[in-house]
Length: 291
Image (cartoon, rainbow, N blue to C red; front, top):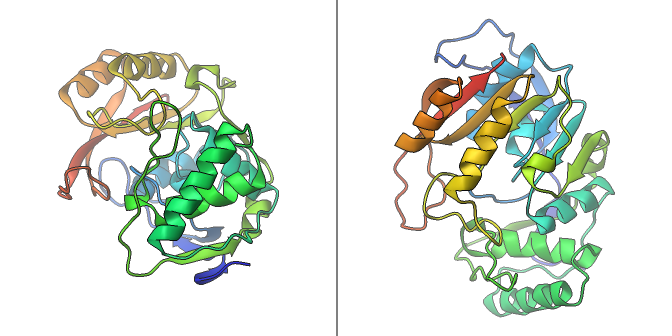
């Protein structure tokens, strides 16, 4: 059974009081919608962007929402599309979401204990080595490691082993019953592939959040190089439907998206996770096309 502070998945009421990209109040009527909270801690989550994204999405909400770098699902759960195609290169993340779609419940013993953390981490890596990475047990362990590990990081060594150290939380609330996600995910498709292999339809609304253009890019084995940033930008520029993308506003990112004809808006992003301990706001760019 599940131990520690454990409860069913919580429902989050999100009030849609959006700002337009220019930073002024839009005429988009406030509403309230119910959705499960993002189930994982995730580096670079974009929940803070929802007031800027909702007015962009509101006139396109009949379209399919596509996220080629879906990460922690903060944006998709915040926008609640009827239809979505959600992709990530991290197979363990996608496996967890596929089990949530089936109605995951966890019986794993979960406590905020260092010895147990390293025992569960070792067992998770054993499952990966034994070809059982898509099992329900692997999904449950992935959730526990994410909630208990340092800063919610998801990091793998060159051999593909999960190597995030134990976190330092005073108290952790674990979720054991994820069945509320089953209904929300019913018409959402999850894939684990390179972003260019995502099967886009011409009228898809694409929200892309690739890893930041910074030195620390080990979100998955292999990282995300500058060449990948350029490839993603050029791929998105070819899409005939609406495109919204966010990234850190480095000089070369700004130059790249200006060259490709995107509209740029600059925002101050909260820095929730930092490998240096620096939590000062980071300048981020929100780029749009075909809106």
